[in-house]
Length: 125
Image (cartoon, rainbow, N blue to C red; front, side, top):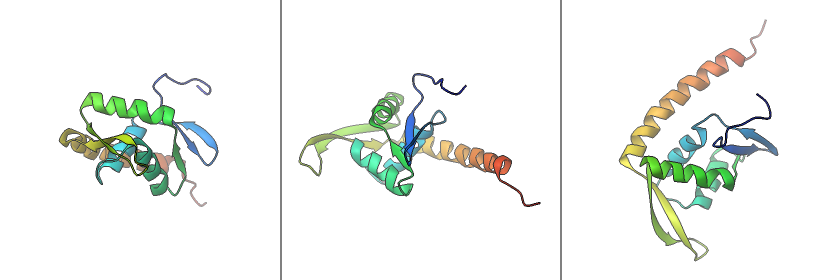
């Protein structure tokens, strides 16, 4: 399947390498970021980068479609505001439904990542 991806497959970079994410991973990262309060798109990107020690870098071409998808699902909402650069910006916030979805998906992610780690980790002989 290398070289093929679906149209809505989110893309991120990790230290110079581009990769496809599992469906829903970027959504989960955005929801987690908004747990701390409202943020505009650039701030969401920077928060994900900071919290991953700059390993994950969100591409704008993936961020904004994900934000629109989350808005459509009712998991986030937005208000207009003024950014740190004194520019008009959309400030996204988590809805009650989004918080419930985050809790459900975070539990699923923890289970999935633990299982994958168990399969791929090298065991000492």
